[in-house]
Image (tube, rainbow, N blue to C red; front, side, top):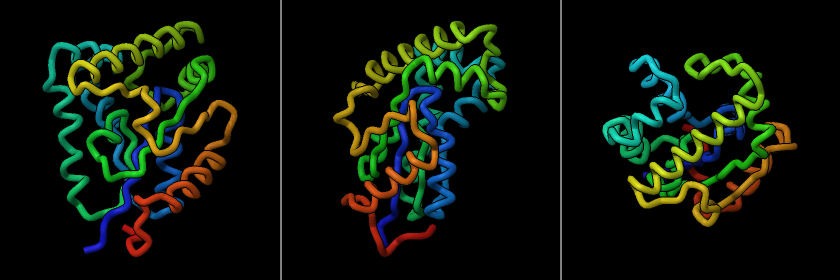
Length: 193
């Protein structure tokens, strides 16, 4: 059986994970999975924002288990995947692990102007968006360190780190694909899903 190709995309809110995941999937012909999308659905189910869901997860491990339990299935599916998730690098160690960084002011601008985030708080100002992003990231970093003993901001956990602040999504994807195809995680014989 051919080994699956899996690229995991991690990074803070507003770094471009969802956009990059979609472009990579289209370019490579891979399936996708997004814990952000799963988290937004769970937030809607509970009638809370994603930041509130993060705070709920601080004291309710069942929320993270609901989100993270899918990785076993992805790993064993035999399909090629692009996975958008802050913890996928940890749960899928045989993946090409990418971390997207972005300046917080640019992340806030992106989130503030993104009208597709239906389960997010509608921010009154750019400063409000920036404060919420900083609070959410601090909550995630602390929670994942406490739950799994993993620092999601430690760049040593990744095969490639890309600053997306001043790059187009196409430039980012091209950079990722070039690095991926040179990596030990690229299995040429299993190119398509």
